[in-house]
Length: 135
Image (tube, rainbow, N blue to C red):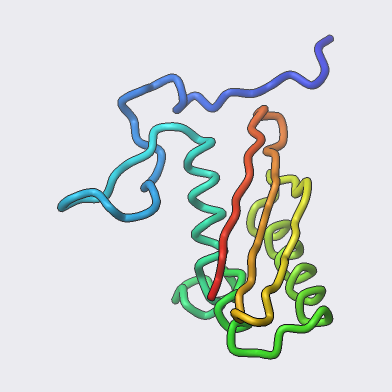
């Protein structure tokens, strides 16, 4: 009996089938596609961080809402609340994602928030990092 076996998505075997849309939107004329589930998951998480709650009409609770914190006084209590809120939202919207490390740092002088996420995907052998800055 094998434990800890890595599952590979069947779509990853078909190199001509696109899984999702790549970020940033920089392809001329049409969207650039990505062809692996790892790239698709990473782009979905980036999209989650860049979306404000209430921005998606049929899913009003989706999004990290980071841009709303830019114009608030950045103090440790706000960052702790934000980190807890992001962790709960990722658990809710991405149940296969395990957050290994989530850090939110501030630069009060520049009114800048830096979000760093290290994550893995259950039974997929996918480990990756995301670093975003919000001004």
